[in-house]
Every structure is written in structure tokens, then in C-alpha cells.
Length: 106
Image 1 (cartoon, rainbow, N blue to C red):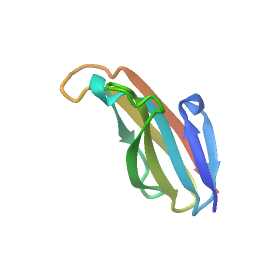
Image 2: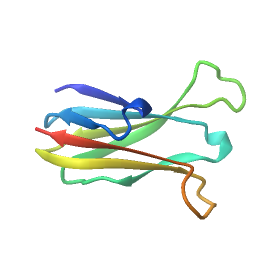
Image 3: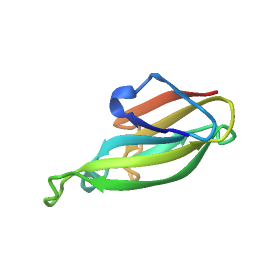
Image 4: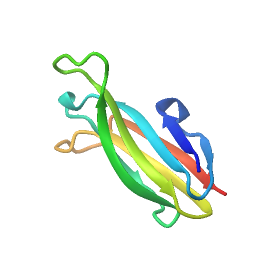
């Protein structure tokens, strides 16, 4: 079982995994701006969400950003797209940014 790290540089790419692997999607975020990454698509029969957390950057001053890390376990063989939207919860309209990867579990 492997730990697979996916960053914003991997957007719109294919990611290969095996059943039992753990995937960590790391997206830059600054919660003090109100913009938060929210998962918007996932095939839960292929990938299981096992949690998320926020890791502050080395610059821990007031208003500093960091990484929002979403974790998944590959449950079984198949394909799933993981999608996220960066938006403010109280604003209507299109998100500020989108991120997605296609995960192929063998």
C-alpha cells in the first residue's frame, strides 16, 4: 500500500493507484479570505473519504495560508474523478477556482 500525494500541479491529470492505497490531495488555501476548498464530486464506491485537515505554512503570522489536505482510500478497482471548488459559502455564482483529477484504481 502506497501513500500518493496529489498537489495543485496535478490538476486535470490521471493518477494511478492500487486498492488499499491512500491518496492525499493538498490544495493551497487561505481560510481568512473566506475561500475554502469543498469536495464536489467523488465515486464513493471506488474512493472513500477518510478526512481532511488544514496545515498552516511556515509563515504562521496573522492571515497566513497553508494547505488543505483531503485524504482518501482506494477501496476497489475502477475509475473516479475527484473534484473540488474554491468558493465562499455565502456567495452565489461560479467558484473562484476548480480542481480535479481522474483516479484509476487497479
